[in-house]
Image (cartoon, rainbow, N blue to C red; front, side):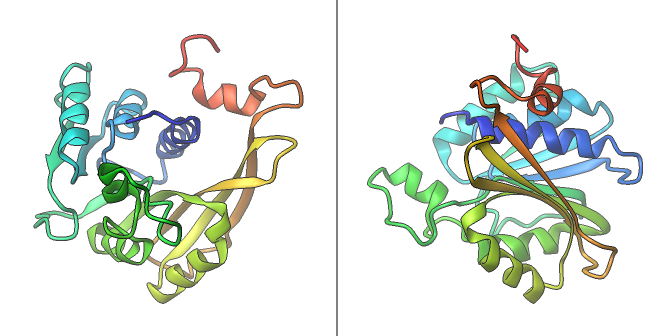
Length: 224
């Protein structure tokens, strides 16, 4: 599985947000492990948290398990091979994170593994959001990376589930591009304060990483 730049940005942003003392996060659920990238980034930047990361695809699970086992954080990242929709979780989490499906309303890709990971035959947003809610502790926080083009649909889903969005960061590929991703932070109580709005560009006008991007990724990229 490929490691994407926006996925790296999301992992770095969540890790930075979790260092905020007000969150008091000790245990995390990562829905859709993929390569294990997000969980490993969180473990690297937050030495006090333990992470359960769950993945339905066998090959992705094997890769995430290998990556976690060979990392310095093996004792804090637990990779689970299961379907999150039926897995019997026995605890609630201080935080739930996910880089969920982007392709619910698009043509199903020919590659079967990609279809399971990204199309509605795997996990839709309408399925994901209730799972996030069900596995959060009462004071827990969620962090999601979503496609910007589904902005209006996403608002309706959160409203239906009575979830509050505390922060939105719109993401551009460059300062010349329109938004293509949105990073969300929120919690169970939809009335908990106003939503903070921000934006970030990955590249500047000269095809160099922006200062904001470099600040977030400096601990993860070798040449920043």
